[in-house]
Image (cartoon, rainbow, N blue to C red; front, side, top):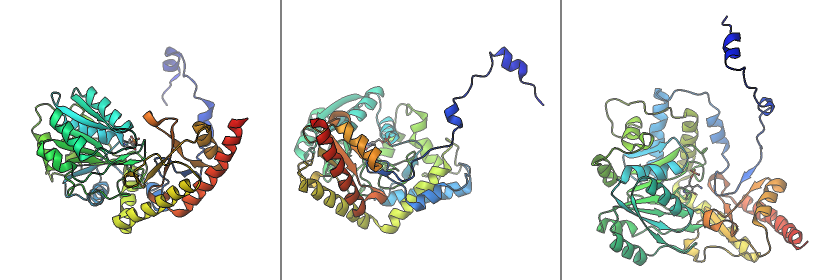
Length: 402
Ligand code: PMP
C-alpha cells in the first residue's frame, strides 16, 4: 500500500470538498422546458442516453455516427458529404463556420437583426476578419434589395445570416439570398439553430454554403453536439486556404476525417466524442425521420398558431409584426406595460415548473419568448403555458400595483 502521509504533509494537507457535493443529486423531474431551448427529451432519447458508455473509436460508435450523418443530410436537405456534428453546443457551429471559411484578410458581411449577428461579429473580429454589418430593426427581416445593395457596397467573401433569430422570434426568409451571394462570388453561412426540423429548410435548393443547428431544440437531443454542413464551394475554400484553420478543434478537414466524410483510408482520432450524446442525437434524428419533415413542420405550425391566437385573444402583442416572418419554433410577445419580466419568468418556474424566457441581448426586458420545439410542440403544452401565464400575469399586475 502506498503511504501518502508525507506527500500530503509536504503539500500543506488536502483541501476539503464542499459538503453539498456529498448530498444526493437533485434534478427536477417534471419541468416543462418552453424557453428557446433546450427542449424536453422524449422517452426514447432518455432511454438511449442511459445506455452504457462505449469508446469514441469503437465500430459501434462509428456506425451511429454514419446514421447521424444520414439523418443530418435529411434534416438539412442536402447531399453535402461534409456533414457531421461538432462536440460542443450551438456556438461551435457558428465559430466553426467562421473559422473555416474566413481568412484574416477577408471581409464578412453580417446581417444583424438581434443577438446572433452580434455574436457572429464578435467571433469574426476575434478571427481578424474585416467585418461589415447591415443592421435591420429588431423583429424585421432583411429584404433582397437591402441585402443586394450591401453586397454591392462591401463585396464580402463571406456572408452571415440567421434563419431563426431566437432573440426576437423572427424567421428570416432565405429563398433567393443564395443566388445573390453567388452572383458576388461569396459564401453564405446560415444559422438555423432554432429552426431546423421545425420550419422548412432546403440547404441545397436554397444554395446555402454552410449551415449549422442545435441538437437540443427541434431534434430533441441533449445539448453538446452541433450539426453542421458545408457544401462543395465551402469545402473548396477550406482546401485552398493560405493559412491553417486557426482552431484545431473546429478544423472541418480534421473533423471530416474523423466522421469519415472523405472516405479516407484511415479514420484518425481527433477528440473523444461523447458516445452518450451520440446515442441521443441518433435517436432524436431517427424520431424526426420517422415522423417525416413535413409532418414535423406541420406540427410546429399548428402548435405555434394556437399559441399566437391565445396571446392575441388575451390582448398580448406579438413582437414580430409580419405574420409570414414569425417563427413557429419560438414566439415572442411584448412585455405588457407595468409587468416585471423577471418576476414573471421566475414565478412561472417556481409555481408552475414551466420555463419561459425573457428577451436576450438587445431584447432583454422587452419581450417574453416561448419555445415549442421537438416533442414540446403540442397543443397540450400550449394550453398549459397559457393557463399558467394567465395566473402569473394576473398576479404580477396586482403585485406591481401594490
Ligand atoms: N444561434 C441561435 C439562433 C440560437 O438560438 C442559439 C441558442 N439559443 C445559438 C446560436 C447558440 O447555441 P448554444 O447556446 O447551444 O451554444
